[in-house]
Image 1 (cartoon, rainbow, N blue to C red):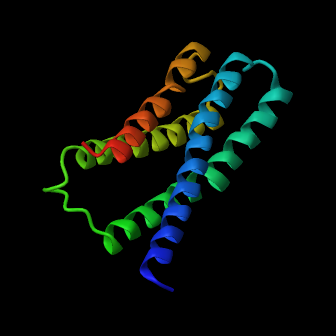
Image 2 (image 1 turned 120 degrees about the vertical axis):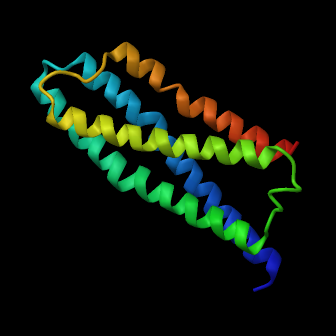
Length: 148
């Protein structure tokens, strides 16, 4: 396999992982909205709790790991000089770190919902909270494409 083909395979794996991870981070807080707003409906909560757990454990976590493995592989095999490539890489990596923090904050709220007899936050809070990955995704994509 030549270098171009290997690079393209890594990029494909990275893009698929990122898309899967972002889909999970977009949907999980939406489930938190429903969970908060329908906290008195036990039958509904039983279903939502299963959805939240499966979404995090089976999609978000593996997709984040795939994103990191493929992203690190791209950086190793096709290195970018972090000190010579401009601010875009610093901003992008900062946004990625913030996205990881957000990812684990979702895990934190997931655990709170599992153990709590009252919602940890309001549906209104989770509606706002749900916008954070969109903003970070925009920053990451702009940096990756424009490379300023």
